[in-house]
Image (cartoon, rainbow, N blue to C red; front, side, top):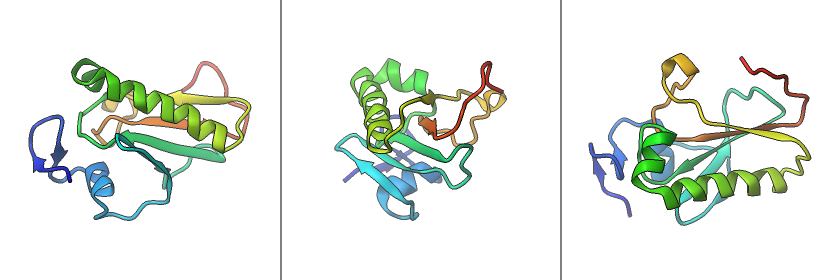
Length: 123
């Protein structure tokens, strides 16, 4: 359905999240839409920790928003739907950008965190 290439806006060869979208790497799926996939984080930082990713590859949220703002909005909308389905009264949506901010997979994604008290400031 989505071609592999090295360009933004498609699948990136070697990208873990692109492999999850393609079904080549298993994940515990929570939700799927035409433009997004949501799945449980394998290293959860809260009782509920779900990642929401666009099906197309962009290295971070800023580049996704600049190139495809409607899909960036879909990611954010789906993060809210995940929180609702997980019955979270309070939750955090986090986008890490760059390794210095803790981004380890360079495919735009939102973390939906909840199920415990979250401190401020984070990190």
